[in-house]
Image (cartoon, rainbow, N blue to C red; front, side, top):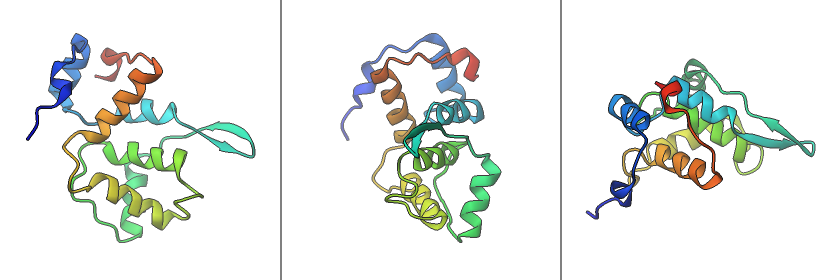
Length: 137
């Protein structure tokens, strides 16, 4: 297996504290923060995404008979928000498909652990959005 290029990154001390506690996964605060930064277009207006609760996402999965194996902490909540912002009512036409999307992203068999978190962090870096890691602890 190749060495991750992120091994060469220099992280802020508070981010290291976060990673020591939660690994490359979303806790409640970070998932809510990340989803609140998401938007979608509705009737030609940019609308903020409202984060779902962990219970709402788990109910969505249960109601659609979808079982997710590899969820860690609040990763499902982040993925649900990402689906809502980017794909809902286009390539993801229904709540059932949203549940399938969540499972497919979380349980992607060839994705390394923490890929969802790392994609989000990369987006934030690319956009120049700083993260108050101390606030996320």
